[in-house]
Image (cartoon, rainbow, N blue to C red; front, side, top):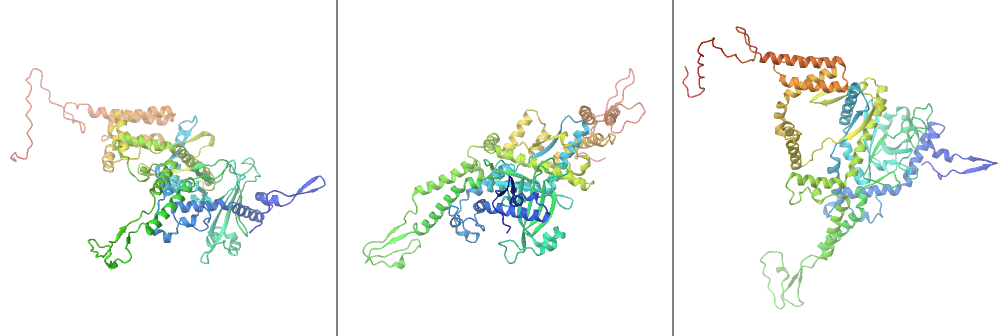
Length: 639
């Protein structure tokens, strides 16, 4: 272990000029003279912070034990009798459990983290080309979110923030690709004094890594890694090394030639990696259930319910013991009575013969009713504190709520309690989008062919970063929910019906919004005409490629959608050559539609698909009687 003396610098006065010793330099690890000294100092500072925050680490283990109801290593022994009230997994089968912490956490995650906020890029006073790049940048972000499985990892981070108070995701580049990992908050170290305003300048991540993996990642330091000592607490079957990854944000301009921004990876024995760091943020995004006052770390549900859960565990344990030891049937026999004890059994209809006083059977009360009332009060109060409905936690509908409007109203009332948490979740995904854009710029500098596949209308489209890169001052980012409809079937149906009755949507769109599985194929066929025409129009606007209208298309719909696309494109500033293609498409559709409707000239064949023109009688002649059509029936004889 590297000795870290008192953080206060010690000074010696020589004449009038103070002389500061090297203690201050060691604590300011980013100013070390050599890379080796910098790595050892950074590792030592991380170890020092970890030792001074041992109480926090113990609390995290306690919260983890409350949620999973099993005891983890290094759990504090004196946190309200945690060891005696939470059993290990091996002996959990004989314990009664009312785990309100897990119920509240899982219910909150299902209500809040199930939403998928979508960051979108909006241009500021941009022309058509800039708007199209912003739209493609949004699609690029959608594809990256999908590749990283960001929403699934975001749900895991939400569970972490509910249990520990803080959830975290880390973004980095590996093998010419953006990666994202979930990070346990216990592995992140920030000095409390530096982080009291919420904006620390240095951050450390410590974790154990396999020796072989570490040697593969840093082949130039293979000799140093091979001789490094294994981490403390590792068993004889494990060969893992404690690694510290440290960041110090630059104090001056990000584009300055010389900066004190540093990114370094080190082990106890020395430095594995070191590079300048020229970003104004750490490569992490944080989600906090409830931010603390003047603290970097947040407060979670497990902390709020810590005392209640322990008291529930204690009462349940006492009730279980009382039920076994006290609430057992007892038989009272008078001394000298001639009762055969073997006749006293649990068989129904047993006959017991006796002489003298008859035996007395009693079942004592295990616990006073106030104990059970106190238990129910604590259990109900836990849900009330968090703001979770017990009906939601048990997946039940409140009696009397039958209509979709009532269900939606109840959902809205519960959502108000979590409004601020939901806003922090949106900011969480917004910060993730900003880091992805920033890393994409770095990756593009290394790989000019950077691209990603995005699924759109059941087709995979390839989007190049060079086609979507925008200057930071040309766009703003906003986040929108992916669905504004309720999630319960009844409430969703009611909302869609209200929109349709208000003439805001038509029946086709209403059926699509209801998302009934058996309607998908029918809707895909009904919308085929619109989708086909829109694909042609979008190809004209985006790529300048022209496809003529066909006889088998809905020509009137071609004219209508073409005019709408033309007017919108004209307002967006689409280049004139593509506007001309839209006008050509509208004219061709109009001409083709009129040619199909025009009657054929005498003696000329009718247009394909056009009805035959009726025969007109000569002037002054009697009208020719038209023969009646033959009835079609299976009962008529075949001629």
